[in-house]
Amino acid sequence: ESRTTTLSSTTTMPPSRPQSKPRKRPNDNGADRREQNPSSSSATHQAQSVTTTLLRTKEMMQQELERVSTLNTTINDDGALLHDAKEEHVGMGGTMKGAQGAMSKLGRQDIRDAIILRCALVFYWIVVVYVLWTRIKIPFLP
Image (tube, rainbow, N blue to C red):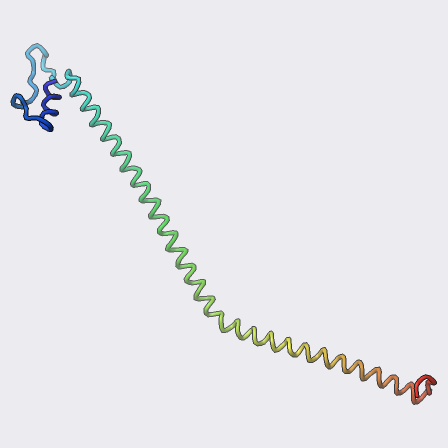
């Protein structure tokens, strides 16, 4: 009780008597008075509780630091991978433009071949009709 009043009096009021270390009673057989003082055991319990809480907080912070470190490494690796992919894409730009030019040239050639084929077919049928008209003299043709 005197310790409690001493602690509270140091924060709000001046102590009524000088602070001193807990004394041993002659009939305690050497036992410390703090062990018997209920406020002292609650202070010890509070100190242990705070210590346990701080250790848990320290452990959680270490785990979070490891998680963030792993995440940072992953982000850096992904950034390097994206950078490499971008460089490869930029390098393929010329190749893609060349391929696009070749494809458009092939497309124009395909259209030209289709026109030539149609003209050849028309010419063939005209020749066939002419040969039939000159050799056989088909009556419905003039």
